[in-house]
Amino acid sequence: MILIYTAYSRGYSLSYIVKEMPMSSSPQHKMTNSRVVLKFGGTSVADLDRIANVAEFVKLEADAGYGVVVVVSAMAGETNRLVDLVHRAIGTGISVDSNLREYDAVVSSGEQVTSGLLALTLQRQGYRARSWQGWQIPLKTSDGHGRARIASIPDDVVGAAVDSGEIAIVAGFQGITEEGRISTLGRGGSDTTAVALAAALGAERCDIYTDIDGVYTTDPRISSNARRLERISYEEMLEMASLGAKVLQTRSVELAMAHNVNLRVLSSFADPKEARNGALQPCTVICSEDEIVEQHIVSGVTHSDSEAKISLMTVPDEPGRAARIFTELAAADINVDMIVQSAAKTAKAANISFSLDEADVARAQELLATLKQDIGYTDVVADRNVSKVSVIGVGMKSHAGVAATMFQTLAERSINILNISTSEIRISVLIHSEYTELAVRALHQAYGLQEMAETS
Ligand code: ASP
Ligand code: MG
View 1 (cartoon, rainbow, N blue to C red):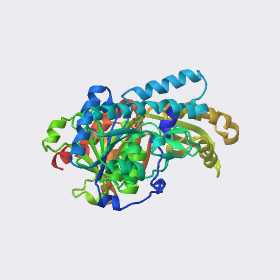
View 2 (view 1 turned 90 degrees about the vertical axis):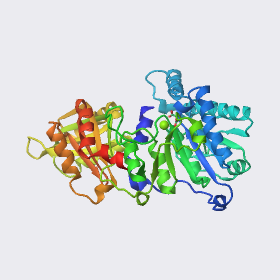
View 3 (view 1 turned 180 degrees about the vertical axis):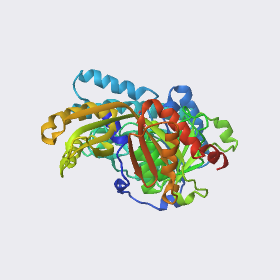
View 4 (view 1 turned 90 degrees about the horizontal axis):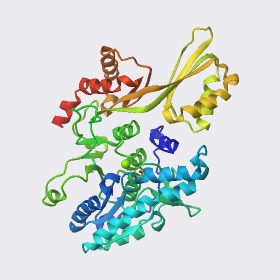
C-alpha cells in the first residue's frame, strides 16, 4: 500500500499535466444555477457529531441557493483500518498488488458509509439529499486499481440533481473501471474526486474543508512562526503537496491547475454559526500566479522524512551505466529524485547516489543486487536516516540568490548537504534527519516568511 501512496506523492512533472478528463463542457451551467463543490476530509466526518457540523456548512450553501455537491472521505482512521484488514486477509509475505481489485472493493467502502450518513443527517433536517457512489455517476477511471486515474465524469445526472435543489453527497476516492469494477484513486484521493467534479460541473468554487484553516508557510508543528498563506499559486501548491505538505493530494492540484478550478482550503472545525452570520472564514485560496498581487520570492518551506539515499560505489565511468541503473529502477516503478555522481577514489570510476522513498529501499536493493555484475559497482550503501527540505516560491523565477541564501543558512548551522535538486520554483536538499527541524526553522526565518505572512 505504501508503494501506491508513494507513486502518487512523488515524481510528477509539469509535463504530466495534460487534460486528463474529456469533459462534456456545458458552459450553460454557469449561466443557470451556480454550483459549488464542498469536500470534507476524514477528521471532518469522524463521527456523527462532526457529520452534523458538516451538515451546517452544507446547509449554508444550499440556503444561499447554490447547487451543492458534497464529496466526503471515510471517517478518520477508517481507510487505514480497511487497508489493514486487506493485508491480513491476503496473508503475510504476499503483496497487496496481487489483488488490487478486491483491495479497492474493500477500501472504497469507508466513503460509502459517510456519504449515506451525511445524506441521512440532511434529510432529517428537511433537506433533499442523496448519496452517490462512484459507479452511479459514473465516475469512470483507468484500470490502474489502487491508484486509478479519472477518465471521465458526465455532468448530466448529478448536475440535474443539484440544479433541482437536491444536495448530492458523493463518496470520494472511488470510481468504476471500463471493466465495471470498483476502483480507488490512491490515498488522499477524495481531494481529486472533488476537484474533478468541480471541473466537470463548472462549479463556481471547490472548497476543501479539513482540520486546519489553510496552507501554511511551513509545518506549524515544527515552527511556531508558521503562518497561513492568504493565497498560493497552483504551481507552488503542487510542489508543496508533492514535497510533504499533506493538505491536498498532488493529483488534485494538477487537475485544479489544468482546469483553472477556484480552490480554497478551510477548516470544518470553525463555527458554522459564525459563517452563517456572515463572518469571513480564514482560508487559503489556491489560484493562478497572476491572481496573486503581492508576490513573494519564497512562499514556503517543506520537509519530508520518508526519504532514503542509495549510493553505488565505484561504478565504471563510461557511457551507458547510469542509463542502465535508472532504466531498471524505472521499470520496477521506483521513483528516484535527487541524483549525484561524483568521482570515486579509483581512476575511471564514479560513485552514483540517488534519493528515493524510504518504502522503496528494500525493493531497490534487491533489484540492484541482481545487477551487480552487469553494472560493475563494488558496493551499495543505503541510508534511511535522511530528510528532504525544500524551499518553494514562484519568485525564484526572477530573483537570484535564493539558493545562496539556503546554502548559507544551512552552512551557518553546520548542516551538511548530501544531495541537491532544483526546479524553476523550488530548491530541495537532502540532509541527515536529525537536522530537519533545525533546518526548517532556520530557513523559515532566513526568508522572512513570518513577516511575509503577517503583512499579506
Ligand atoms: N479515505 C481515503 C484515504 O484515507 C481517501 C481520502 O480521504 O481522500 O486515503
Ligand atoms: Mg486528505
